[in-house]
Amino acid sequence: MEAIEHAGPGQYDEAYLDYLVQVIDKARHYNIRLFIDPHQDVWGRLSGGDGAPGWTYEAVGFNPRNFTATGAAIVHATFGGEPLPRMIWPSNYTKLAAATMFTLFFGGNDFAPLIKIEGEPAQDYLQRHFIDGLKQVARRVKESTQRRRLRFVQRAFDGLHRREGPDAAHEHFAHGHRADAVRVDAAGCGLFA
Image (cartoon, helix red, strand yellow):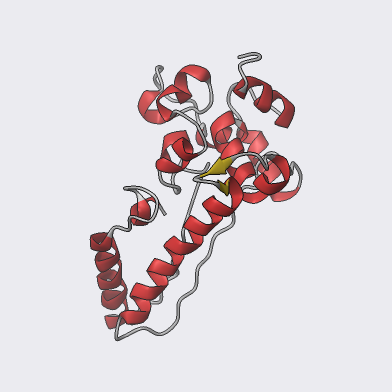
């Protein structure tokens, strides 16, 4: 979704959307079927993965420039040691930055009802922007004269409020400190590092 709305909330990259339609039309010319995957890994690029735009962290009060120093995320571009530990990126699912963002996205109204973005509950705001980004893609594909059908596919991490099932598999790849919801919240409040 970062490619669609990277400049800020509601600011859509029309050049990228034009490019996406061109790729879709070229694939159809060769009878290639496509799936559009609004993919994410560990929320977004600034918390060691990919997906959500950087402004989403700032919208909830994070300063991504401090993620490495505070241990909120292991980010390849700012990781001090070489070589990087094997399979390091899934570690970020249970670190402060990504775990908090997913919790706010899926459970913010229940777990953090006082966190607001521009007066709107964080969960509603983040979900609205995600859905609006998908609508931009759907609108552009619909306007394409050669459209057939559009499918969005993605399965995301739930955040701190669920620790069983398929998402628990990320625990096997953890690097460094892992925390439960209480420890992540305490670290975020500055109670311990």
